[in-house]
Image (cartoon, each protein chain N blue to C red):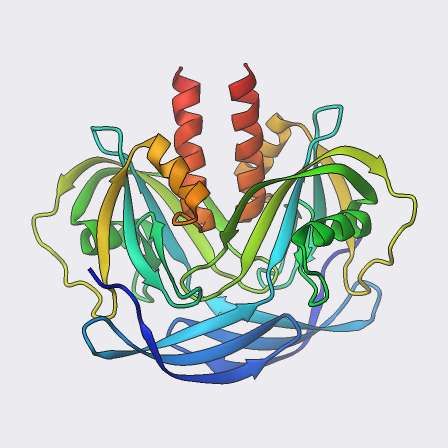
Length: 183
Length: 183
């Protein structure tokens, strides 16, 4: 079976600071045409940190698209000058939780919304965490607090809806997987 | 600490078939203003199905935002006339894999890209699967094949990058969690 769609026409309809939007006309495998709405994003990282006290580190912040406060693992956009997402992870951990990882392991990388966006996210497991020596300036438009939770507390916050995004639920599930594999 | 942002101004910059785009000006907790780019989406469902032979059901399809073929669990947008996402799950299972679930359990619901989009996804576990009696028409612009994989095969496809989106990796991790909890 053929799956590929050929680009007939592509038009940038919006250029923003975080995302661009394109409208594509594609030719389907059967020769018919269809429209595709595509959000372009530069990619992102998310970092799973578990402390020596067996607590996961979360960031409490306002999310305007949903107009609610959320608890998420530290995360952020890959800047255009960052060639390696590991550098983004190190920077975001510094900015958001003031920790430096001695080690970063890639747990998974994935597309967050493959139906309409090309956002590619790299999920890291950070270990050997130490307080940073030099604090990077925080984003001027980010207001956040750091929260540490046990696995049981994190699972409760998923039920309660404060933990409510895919990357953070993935991190909590991955944590439980690691615990169950060890036991 | 105050987190909430107040909407100062909101402007729709694009209205599409799948997504709309808004530009907001918000007032931050410190009184300063910032811009927010927000993709509006009507929500979606994804369905985890494990057959009696212990194989998970995936759909192989082209994803134009990444211009690649992917293996994903059955999923789709909530239509404007669908008040309950369970109905969307039943419809999508019919359209994409021709199965009807005797039972649907909500595993989790989450936002897929909380930084720039309000897409809310409901992830179901479908059981008591039976062939549908009435086949719904398939989307004219969707070309897909159904693929069944064991847990070991699914984990290999994550490594290989054919399984490459958050909801599907969540389903595979959830499957492994369920297996480990049972053992």
